[in-house]
Image 1 (cartoon, helix red, strand yellow):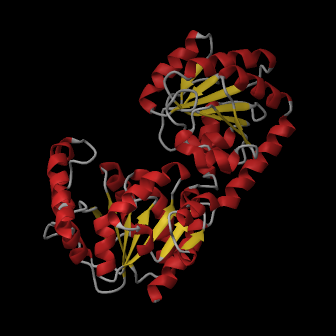
Image 2: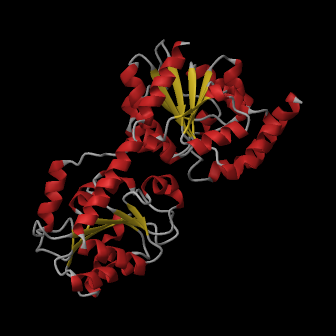
Image 3: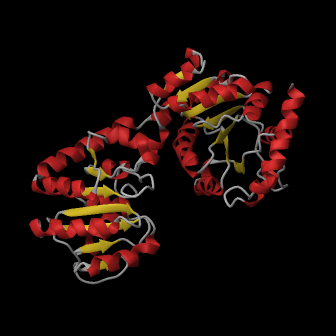
Length: 419
């Protein structure tokens, strides 16, 4: 049976090889994915070693606060991080000072996994979300390597899929020393899949620890000076907007200015190369508009075409709308403006940030179904600024309340290393 499973895994691999060699996110680092490393691959000094694995850029980003907390507690621990996609590797390289080495995860094949584990020699492996690779997990257990599931994400909707997988591989959850789950519902899903109570901890989501909750005063001052707006002018910030949203948002701004003439707007397109297009849309509506990178007078609408100033722009806003949510793009980061004490509005398409919606909805965050509803809510908040401030304070309190998972998880992992 074991031989059949091995042969089947190689058959599936060879059938998938053309796709793996041509997919833009997966075609790089083939040698490392097969467990072969160049001679100049970083030499890891003797000592405790952790392998952290996150599939993509978002997964790697959620591991960064954990890595910082582990290094703060145990500077002697070497961290190696693996990923699957090019964007995941690029994210890891942005924080390479934390890691002794960065690599692609080996394909889940017996030979590739064995070669990777011999080279990395981890004492403990941390797998992010639902990175349940059967060969890696079994090989780690056979070598006495401890396993931790981090930010565990197990939904009721996929229980059938996990049960089918476990019918082929055995219950992979039982191989883990710790299952660090994001919330009670996902912990319950782990129990329903057969996990033992002693394995499970509900510690929260470390992605919230990445939030920059303190503004950079210098950047805020620079953006404020660039607007040339009166200090008491109410500002509406539309952040991370996508094509198909700006037209409706600018129309709303024109309508809102009729009742609140002092209102000003900052639009930050998700992709800065679209900034000229957004400015053109504003000018067509009779608005004075200017790019952030250009000097000039005091515009009605400032369009951000710079990198790294969105958070500072949120600091200037009285109200914030986060884009990618009126078009089916799955939303954008709504916790960033909330961390700055702003009431946050967003549309119906938020499936990529469902956990953030759960944090804010009804507690400083307002989801609207349409631009028409958005206009009504904005008009009401502009008419009642004290209510807007209350919502903003509530939003910031929520953000502060969900932080801290990385410290909890690092403490548990460091204790596990001692066993």
